[in-house]
Image 1 (cartoon, rainbow, N blue to C red):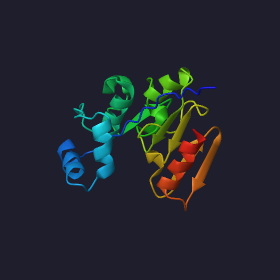
Image 2 (spheres, rainbow, N blue to C red):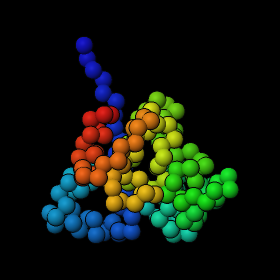
Image 3 (cartoon, rainbow, N blue to C red):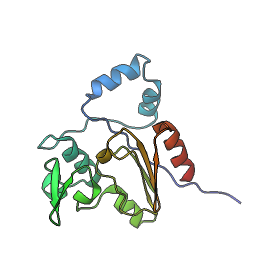
Image 4 (cartoon, rainbow, N blue to C red):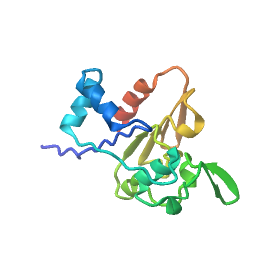
Length: 165
């Protein structure tokens, strides 16, 4: 019996760091894993959209939509009379890549991605360390269970999350 593995896609984004700095560290040996990922994958510049705020640009990357469509043109959005951080998935009304993937039956894992928590389809979307709650503790959300883990490092939670998927 042959097993067919589904291809996996990993998207890594760095906030507020020029690509030239990442390339310099990859090339001088201080970031060998990034060097390997850059050699075996693809990378490039991402041009910011305006206004140039962290949640605005992460929402544009996750949706492909303009800030007026994502409603993330500021640090907050009002949804049903409730003021939400635009790091909160409920503040972004349009489709994200993980919503589209879930509708196709694909699973996603978002690690510290602004606007990914709470996950829209818990059976298909897993979120690790959502930014809207801060990084003092690490969160692993899968299915209908939210585990709050004060002791494990993000690395150990990522290992657990990838074993689940």
